[in-house]
Length: 262
Image 1 (tube, one colour):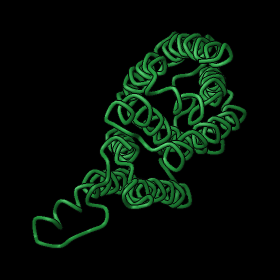
Image 2 (cartoon, rainbow, N blue to C red):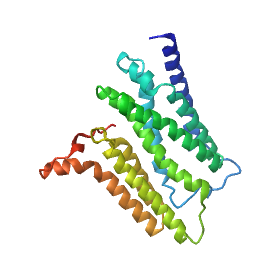
Image 3 (cartoon, helix red, strand yellow):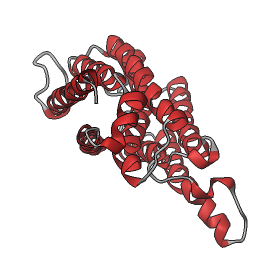
Image 4 (cartoon, helix red, strand yellow):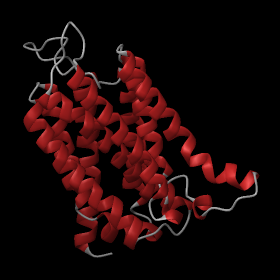
């Protein structure tokens, strides 16, 4: 292991600790004094309980920064993830800080930049550095699969935060249509994760989006929006089980061995 690689892994640990502290502050810290309880609320905003996804993401990323020191993880940590972990963490921290202070448009820009960086790691690992064992799946691939699914869901919510508003009369026709389009996009994306290159299907990311859709259902009151979200959540939860259902009824499918952890 070269000195540069040691330095890179030390930086990963430092930025992870920074990421952990900034996320905790942004998610559960005090609201800005100039804020309002309705700030950032949209017709696609999920219930707050979905923020517990951050806990799982940080636990898995914490496992990653430990596992990276093992010889078996060296190649994937350096070549598969590389400096994009540092870049993703800094962009993600900036996005959360901006949203915390109600800067939704510039925050959305940083959210897209975060999505770009996390996506690079996600696809680089899937295409060029496949997991060799369950440790690789759990401590390298799963954290970035989970993070990627959460970022995709957050990007849709962030889009509405930046460019829409709520009304006391409830959503208008066009607001309802655009929200339903967003929900359908998330549903098809969760299906796409499972179908992604068949044998490389990513159930972890799909599960995160399914939880997000369920959180939209529990938080929204408009019947059109909440029941479309509920239907999307059910599809997203059940679609990964499709190969096993086919197997039970005697039909084979190429997605049968889709890995649970991406």
